[in-house]
Amino acid sequence: MSQEEIIANTKTVVQGLEALKNENCTILSGLLQSLQLVKETSKGTDVNTRLMEEKATIIRKSIESIELGLNEAHVMMALAGHLQSIEAEKQKFRAQVRRLCQENSWLRDELANTQQRLQVSEQTVAQLEEEKRHLEYMNSLKKYDTGEASVSEESYTSKSKTDNEKDPLDLGFPDDDDDDNVHPGGLTSTPPGCQMATGGNPGYEIPARLRTLHNLVIQYASQGRYEVAVPLCKQALEDLEKSSGHDHPDVATMLNILALVYRDQYKYKEAANLLNDALAIREKTLGENHPAVAATLNNLAVLYGKRSRYKEAEPLCKRALEIRERVLGKQHPDVAKQLNNLALLCQNQGKYDEVEKYYMRALEIYESALGPDDPNVAKTKNNLASAYLKQSKYKEAEALYKEILTRVHEREFGNINEENKPIWQLAEEREERKNGTPTISDYGGWYKAVDKWYGCVQLLQLH
Image 1 (cartoon, rainbow, N blue to C red):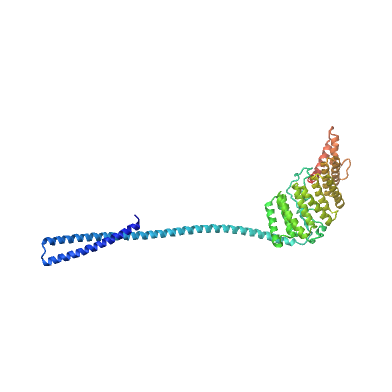
Image 2: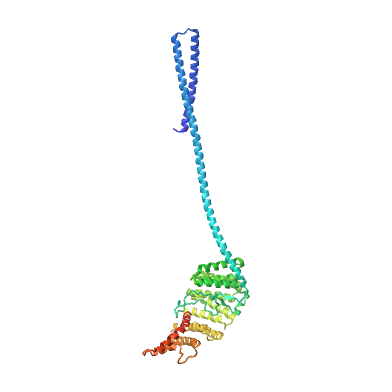
């Protein structure tokens, strides 16, 4: 039985007891009046009087019992009311506990969100401080932006590669960084004729701050710190796009620098996408015959060559050659360098007739423009000799190698005579006397020559 049912039944009993009490009180009152009349008249017998008194006593006891029951019922009802109030307070407290738990959970969530926002804010502050330092650095570079001669990014150099990465006869497509007019920072100055083009924006010059940034990127890349070089390029690219828009020559320059960093990391797909983007921007803003367009075409051809996509690289290299011939003239050293690249592409495709033609023309340009002792002459002869070896033209290759070694020997040791022979001649004489016993002087001359020629041999192995 529930509490509500007990209270309802108790109220019913109280009502019944009160009715019974009233009825007994009425009976007792009538009985007492009758007893009083009997005593006054003295007509009643003693038996009747006693009987009436006994009945009155019984009724009084019944009334007392009823009153006792009523009191107990009232106590029960009061207790039930008290219990109800306690239960109400209990429910109230439970509601307050639930509300406090909800508030506590909300406060915890709010605290977690606040901590997260604080962490994000700290990261943002750190990023802003880094951007501030970068902007201060870039601002400090503006003082060097004095409109000096523009540069070609195709001379990007990765100094982290060791000298023995390539086999002496490996004809793999090289980096376009074989210029001898490389500054200490790794940039190659573009000759004055390269600053002008027949169309587009002929007066464009790459800002000095980008050249300085390029030097800094090269320094990081040469140390293998690509985690610094790549974000630096990306931040500079983002700043340039915000200040100048995407279709700007400076943005193309920055894309080209970042692409060459990716190329050095062997991320050829990303590098190709950036170079294609840079090519589109330069063609749009500078014109299709600008030297910067030729530089990007050449870098893209180099990239395709590294991925053995020679058929795609060859037309790009030829177009770069046409631009340089048109802008610089057909006897310019940059044209010879482009001819070297084109020859290597054709050599990897087995087009040896074209290979010899391109190398011979490049050799002619270098000798006439830079002189027979220029290192590019020796490099081109070495490349041509390698092509001869590929075709099993050993006599022609041998003659070129001897020319190279003889020329360098004369430059280092003076005129050739019986006491001053080049290394190849010493080697041939040793072969002729191989059945005899070499003298100490033979060994001394050989190792002396090898010691002097070591740097030259290493240089030739790389090209």
